[in-house]
Length: 345
Image (cartoon, rainbow, N blue to C red; front, side, top):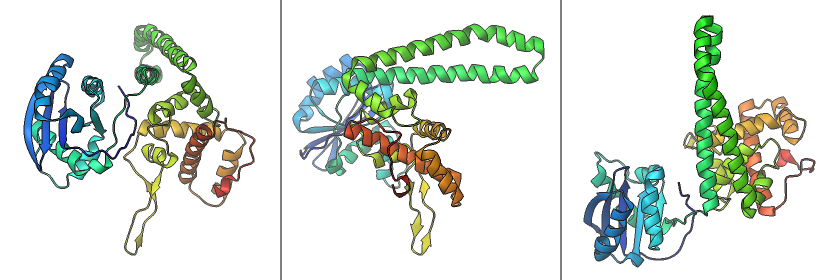
């Protein structure tokens, strides 16, 4: 799917169009002069959307003074985004949970009500708007292939794990039967995964910016190509997310204080996060701790001080993130032998 790039401006809007998106249809609502003035449902098809936008909706609003707001529903938003971008419309692609939590206590929902609430959200929080801008083609392809690779690896694991267990617990004849029917498929998956990885590498090599950022991120100790690519996609080449603290929050490794009055609770990470990214960062930590170096020294020192291993590992995840952004900002690869005071960082 297309990625969003944060872009703020001070423009004032007169019309706010909320759009509820599903696979089959789109619901539009217009908020203007303090109330909902219009609602319409159309098919989620490019020709239908284009005709509706230019011939009907443009009679209700001034497109140049309108903010279109919608929830990020994955690939179902792609057609609508293409049409709106082609007409140079102001687009706000917001996280669904952000809109939901802004509503307070609500009862009942349907597509029409949701559309009204999205339009009202756009009006209420217009000062916090983050305008959508499409990612360049190479980054879109990179994300699509990364998603495909993840799916292929998942299917591969779903086949290999039960087969491995059946070897220990099933009758030999039954295991041979299962093995015979999955061996060829596993071989095909292995070849396909390698082919997708080659395509990913080609896209990176052919794009000067992607190549440079990829080399910088994978220069950090413990970071493998899969993680480097995931970071590039998630951050939009470090443009959509340009702050290490925001990325740490996104990845679920930033600790948040939990206190009230005299009660002082321990800082904990939030469960609202990209769990896949968090797992990849944990793999980086595990890999880096296999070798002597700054992360290993830091880990051993903190464990000797009585710190829980999970807390120390989370601290190292944060330090790896800091090094991602430091390398990209400076344009220099990570120096493994650089004498950095890790204990005070």
